[in-house]
Image (cartoon, rainbow, N blue to C red; front, side):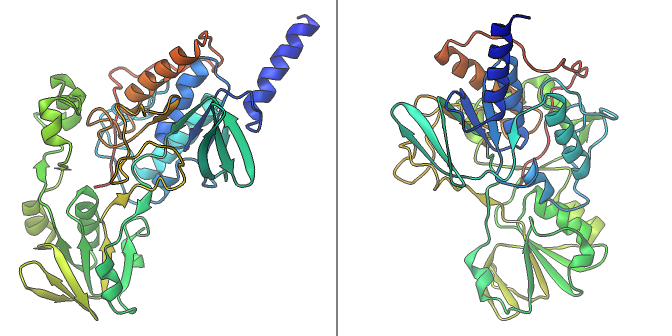
Length: 392
């Protein structure tokens, strides 16, 4: 190998590992499933990039879930591009297995992930993006915000009206039933998370579930096949947010593998309507009934937080404006949002579709010559379309 070629190779390697270099092409913000799927495609294109993660480990959102969590999509539908999810493709992986898989993914494709690197501000100067990262400045041509839909845990204001001796936790702070004090527990939130936590707690506690908005229950399996097998085969999972059906479904959620009837009959969990007020140890509900309680688990979801982005990409109500993740600011994209393009956009197995789309757009805008620098890929699992779970 010539001395000149050695010098060029060393320069590329050093740029890929040094995010302070102004010769980086792109920065991906967030080292969860969306960020790593994006990293896979950027590697495929031979891009110089860095993945910035504010946490001290990859996939921090998964680490905040309760111990017994299982995905509601099987392993065969829970893979990122290039690496099958190990194990029985018809079985459902646990939280810890998802974390292990994502760690393996980052190692397999040697993704340039920087932990403990929170982006404090994103702005634009002289045609390039400037990222303030804990005192450092990184400048790049393109940015993909892959922080996903699970950003700031949301707890209603009425939580402040309860006595301090009432144990309270958001679902991100709940780990196992033994952490919850004895007595009556109210789970607030009628999505998949609320139902699953209520089921688990019912074995050791008196549990009530407060449901504000009813969701359509769907069985986990139909005719011996998983629900997502049917959604894939019928093409429903690929219906876009701009389709007539997508417009009807985008603001609704579904209960997968749970139902109010099952909760009452099998788990003896009492259902209550929306919680409207609190005082002392008492919660009041929409129907006028009241409940004295010992603990509350708030399965009330998340709210986005883009206060660190100093760019004109929000509407008058501070909502993000985009089309399939592409914003009006050239070079700035988002990935992993709920219904970003389809029902699967925020799911681990289908996020690759939007990642592939965005990577091609970014490559086209920079006229990048595609070359492979990633390690040899593992073969795709047969039928591994992918997809797990979303906070409800």
